[in-house]
Image 1 (spheres, rainbow, N blue to C red):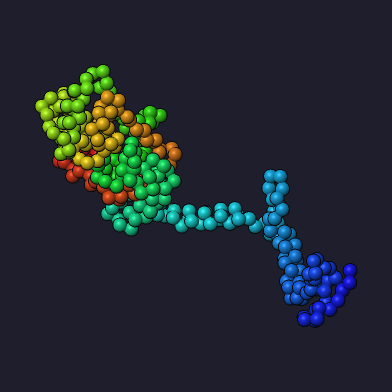
Image 2 (cartoon, rainbow, N blue to C red):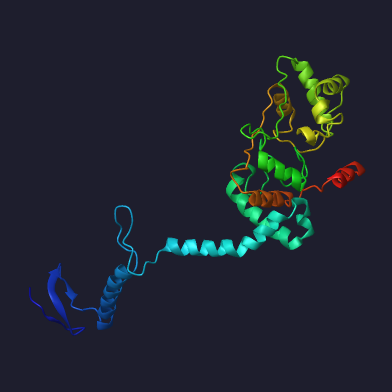
Length: 299
């Protein structure tokens, strides 16, 4: 290995040659070496002061005792303390009176939006628009009522969640075997006529009166007290085509919503109700009747 001076650059070569190609000996500048040595020193100090080396069930703790989990716990505790007063106000406020305090209602809706993203989007979608079999929460069509109190009750006790004693429940009977194809066609046509999409017929109207009006109402407007869906609008849970309606008549499908009582605290449920109510289709409570006022006076 013979080193020589490269004439064009005046730089010494390293003495190697490959196919006539020689490498110049150009060491790194001193500032780069000093920076490299500084990083080694920094790393040595870091592994002493902070968690660094992974062990079997944990990492080395470091002499300062710092951890990102510890910082997160402190920040979450501080956030909980900061919102505690607001949470207490929401807990102490009757849910129907929340809209009277716009600032408190805004906080409740924001908290409900966060809870919705964690617990509800799986069925109702990120925008609460639903999908076949999962209700759209953005419209004003409610199976069990759309007031804040009614929504809160539905969230608390669920729908057909039989582990909860007070769950909302109804069952549409299957008419397969009871109706022949002609009867199903006549009833389907009548149901479609309620929303202006089909031709009314006497046979279908009579079948509806005999078998369906008890839950859906004589005009198909629905009965929220028993969870009977409205059939006179353009909103359909399982599809609004003749085939979809016929299928539902013969072999009805029934959704299940879990009861959130025990899974979520009462304030979170109240905030969820506020968020759902604020999506655009929330209903106001019915005006108190003289009979209701008398009950309040007695209490």
